[in-house]
Image 1 (spheres, helix red, strand yellow):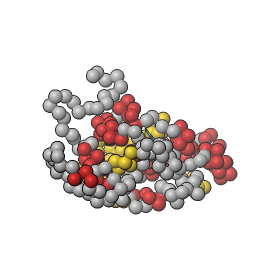
Image 2: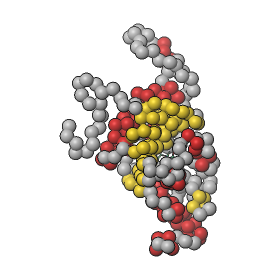
Image 3: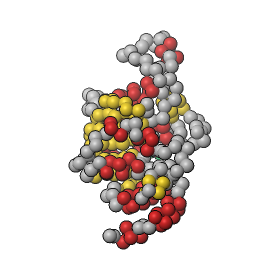
Length: 261
Ligand SMILES: C[S@@+](CC[C@H](N)C(=O)[O-])C[C@H]1O[C@@H](n2cnc3c(N)ncnc32)[C@H](O)[C@@H]1O
C-alpha cells in the first residue's frame, strides 16, 4: 500500500478531505461517501449518465480519452474503469482539479488532470480516440471556435458532446441558400438559434450562449462531426470526419503553439 493510500485509508479522513475540498459539483461516491449529496440536479451526473452510458463502448482497452471540462472527474474515472489506457482530464478550475486528483487517488486510478482551457488544447500535440466535451459549450464566449479546435487538434474518432439547450426542440431543414430578401426562416422556432446571455442565467455569470436543438446539431455538423446517436435529449455521440480544406489554404483556425504559420 502506498503512503498516499495509507493517508486516505480511513472513512473519517475521506469525509474530512471531501469537506475541505468542497463545494463539489460532481456527486461522486468515494468509498461510499457522497461528495455532493444535496446537488440541485439530484444525484448528478449519475442520473444523467444512466441515460447514455451504453452509447459509449463498454470496453475501452487500449484507447486514449480526453475529458475537456472534466470537473471532479466523473467521466474520466468512468472511462478509466472501462479500461482506457490513457485518460487526461483538463479544466480551468484548480479547485475542481484538486477534487479530481483526490478522487483518482482514492480509486487508485491512473488518470492525469491538468489545468488547461479548451483554447490551449493544440499545445497537447496529441489526438485521442474519445474526446468528451460535456456541459462546457455554453460556458464559452466563443463556442464554435472551441468545436473547431477540438476537431482540428485533439479528436480522432469518437466525440461525446452535451450542451444545455433552450428554445424550440423543432428542427427546420435549412435550405442550401436563401435569397437576401427571404427573411421568414429566421422567425421559425426550429431555425438554428443561439441565445446570448448578457448577464446571468441560472445565477451563473459563466453561461454565455444557449443554443436550441437545431443549432447544436448544425454546429456539430459544421465543425466536422457526424452525429451517430442522441441517447439523451442533450447528449450526442459523434464521429470525427475530415472537413473540406479550402483551396486557398488550410482550414486550421488555431495552429499549435510554436507551429510555423
Ligand atoms: C457544467 S460543468 C460540466 C462538468 C462535466 N463535464 C460534466 O458534464 O459533468 C463545466 C466545467 O467546464 C469547466 N470549464 C469552463 N470553461 C472552461 C474552459 N474554457 N476550458 C476548459 N474547461 C472549462 C468548468 O470549470 C467546469 O468544471
